[in-house]
Image (cartoon, rainbow, N blue to C red; front, side):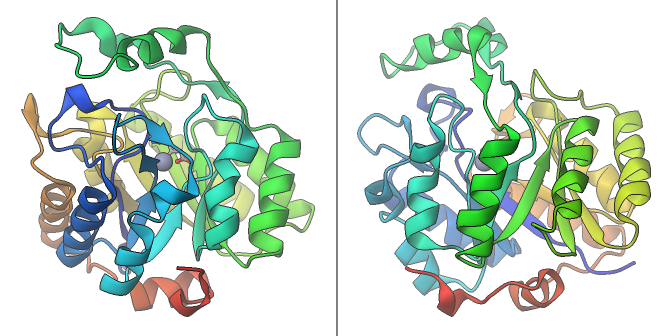
Length: 308
Ligand code: KMH
Ligand code: ZN
């Protein structure tokens, strides 16, 4: 089996500060956890920003500049900026930092969908910030908008004009067909790095049968021109990505998608999750790819060509 890519998504926009003291919030936290995750074996760092005062997901370039330069100086891991941001942001807000930084990689969410986080309200908590509870409550009426027009805009502005390659986030079978549509329109060149996303309420559930089917249909639509990676939200993270690794796929960990290291036990850091999956995949006989190998495999433009 070929090498395996470990992506680590450091903070995201799903979890809120009250859910874990280990969720990185400030630029210094995000940089420090990113460097440690890269040291542990993550060759791609998937990046979101937060407001350091409130912990709220942020799209502000200033907040990205709180950690992107430190990561660019301190690691050769590939910096992958989210264009999903948070579902409550407008597309132009989501694009501000990636347009300015012109990263080697950016995420691209392949369809409009529900993004319901309100089940996380189930637990009794002492909320640290006033925004957290209303934010989660509001997700019962939240549309994560990624129309074909939005996708065209991102592919043009970041891909064609700034040389970024993409992590295609597919939460559903239908998203594979949307990806194929943009391939047919000539917007995207192979190989396609497809992230299958499981366990977001609004996308597909974390059933292994769904993973098999996503692979089957991707084989049909993209033949040898794609690589798949898997992320799964919450407690399904490690089990489902371990299956993906055994199937020859790639894996994504990180506190963006799961705050735990084992059932009911908070992870102390992003690096702890990287270390755990690294051990699992190495025991399966997979070899963790270096950033250099990933750049060659995915045809990235190189770290020198970003604005950081
Ligand atoms: N946290 C993932 C389920 C993005 O940043 O573009 C979604 C995500 C989207 O990573
Ligand atoms: Zn993300």
